[in-house]
Length: 133
Length: 383
Image (cartoon, rainbow over all chains, first blue to last red; front, side):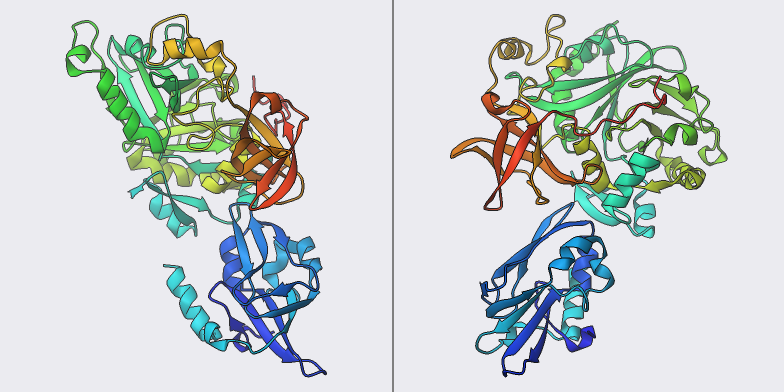
């Protein structure tokens, strides 16, 4: 996926919104290249089981590096419908394709997506540039 | 924040700089795991100029240090280095240090005490409190001491290929330099501009290796020379991130984690570093009492099931009973296991005992494991 077409949470998750044949909104969620670059040396990722209900802003998993552990936060309300468990087997390489093959979870969105809490790519880049200083 | 003479080099080479004990230090240049593995398999160089170094000389230096440190000073041989502790009156650990014994150009003894960066100011005050000016100037027993931290850079060159790398760089016969020994040397490279340094076979990684001190004015040039010479051997610069994973695998304590003023040497497994029969020093009487008591907690290794890391402060349980707390943890790049050090009640501190660690609200099974987690295979590199 082209990162410029994604939305970003200030906590470094990206989300891609699509509509499935039933008319439900599906959010594909991953972690940004910026966050992966900052983490390095990943050793563990904990992802939720299919069926788990998530709240926007609530944790859905954790990602651990040699140095530190970080929570992963859901950008939307909804239910986990698919988990990319293959990511756990290639943690050392997920930074190679963070916006494509290495998505983390797909969530069937409940209600409306609160876009006011999400950033465009340009806005997110600006936040990262500020974080880096 | 303090900067070492290598600060600009670190920044220019892409290091991530972090605050560590009041110093801006490189946590990593590339990846912690790569830097860790390079040190285990080839060679790594780390800037450790933040370590405090205090030099003592004068006819009263030996006696003064013997009255301050937990180890014997009398029988130190020329060039010998000893791991020692500084304890308070209660026997709590103020710092863990290395003390080295050398002769200056006039053949007179001097000592270099290497202290933790975060404890330097505290130890300097401790020295001032225990060495009032009038005592330091008693004729025939004078003690002159200098905090030389900012005057000397120090590099740790660690790993199985460090001997090959350094043997022709200095005029000492490193092949015969034993572990925990050092020497004043000439550096046989134009980068040193005919200055000397001190090299010792010491380290904080569990590998064979050396620590080299050189004057701050030549630090960058000597560092660059070593980096160039080391490239064909697989040398990489390593940050304090890898320094931490390496020392953890080697089971070495870190002040502020495994050691502090409320922990005594017997809890920490450092009883070997306390000589209680000789010269009196602060804490000696307390340590004599503590030696004969069962400690309330002792330092152990833990291997945690799965890949989650139990970090400092994680509580340890046996059933519902809280039996201790983790002081350091990481994911071991060498063993590919989650490892930690912890203080546990002595009943639970036996290798093989199964416990649980509360890792961020979730219990993970763990097993008490002998330290160190990693021991290098000796291939004749150490005499």
